[in-house]
Length: 601
Image (cartoon, rainbow, N blue to C red; front, side, top):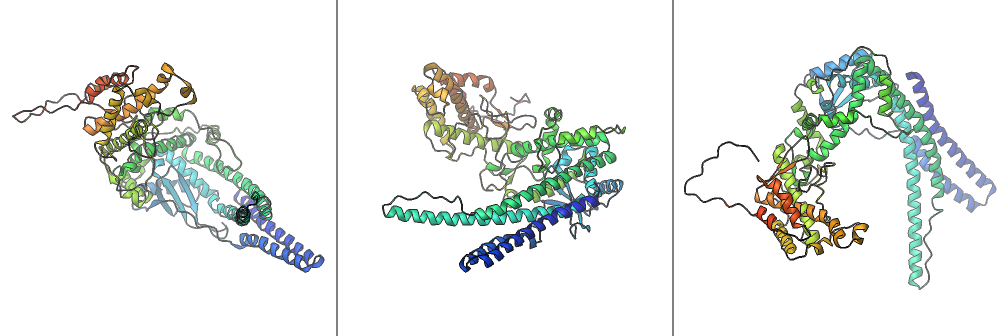
């Protein structure tokens, strides 16, 4: 369907909204006339009031023509003098599509590329065109893949999709606004009626009578009936306009295949879901890892660190590329499923242009590091920008140390009643909440993870040995637990742990087997925290897998057996105490010489 038929259809659908409003206003006017002619004055007055109240949301929806202002995406505008190669690429693609190039290019912090246009006169006249390109998207795409994405976006300009979107958007806004007005009035009426009935019921109880149950079933029914009429038209409107949006996506894909090549376009479409999933993982498990400890990576690395993850986890990403995501299909989707788009592109005849994934699309930027730092300033909140910055290895060690300490305190609070945080679950198998499939193992090795809260308090501690209850509280908790185990209280302590129904019903050895993994994991967290307090362990950064806790030489082999002995049927804490005994520095009268270089444990 060409631009003219699509514009005509959009105008007809928008006119339908106004026709519905005029029809309802005419019906209300007819009811007023009938009431004035055929009913007594008091009843007619009530009808007039009800009609006026119902007509107000209709009139507001019809004549409040201004749409809400467009929510601008945080980003950095780059001109041609700053990014000449990127601008040349965009202009070249726009020329091949046969459309006017954008007037502005913005670099953003999301996995997306999008175009918009400030059209006028309901889309009949064009306006300022903007192209938004996400740096994470550029990080994951090759140059040929980015050209395919840009050709797709320029295809939207060439097909007048951005101009016609103004008409469709206006209709959606008016319908949703009118429905919201009716629902708001219905809700207010219900609240008022509920308050009246509750007051009446309270007065009845005060007099010793039985209060009636509050019932607001029939309240606001007229408003809801009007809202249902507009909701029905709104569903029809959305189905009609969004089906056109899906066809526009297919048309833009064809334009991309024509300009950038079939294989490059198909490869880019396959790559985008992979980049999106990897970026979500990166934000949750790396970029925001230190937020709870008041830490962030160095400037530019909050976004730029995504490059390290993609380079290190290429095998995992290759596995994701093998299968396209399965998405539930809805008539209210604005985009077709990726699998369907890929199938249509790959069904096109071979054009002889193979996808060239060698050169990264970040090479189109004059200075990628500077761009990452500039966009980061717009993405993060002022509070997040005030957090302390550390290099990645120091950040991982400090953040994971704080998480280990908190996890140990939660377990201690659960089994011994010591002071700790609000969460009292024994999260020995949770390294702070991040890496899927990489929680704390039996050696107390949590994976990366943290709540993504860039607005966290910038004053929170970043010391690796930070202990909210004091530097000695954690060691005292571990010592008290070991003393309790030596006193024969291990299985009484186990009764404080959360248990499933099956575990709660077990007795004797079966009950011990249910509790043993939890006890071992919680004790492992306490031991890991003690190693960190003593400065004898360090969290090591890894982009390819979870962070690992580096223990003193030989302890990696000895610690599992010591933990097993501590939670055995006949517990023995001796091996564990021996491992945790601080090593005293040897006394010497002469300055110690630096050891010769050797292997690192």
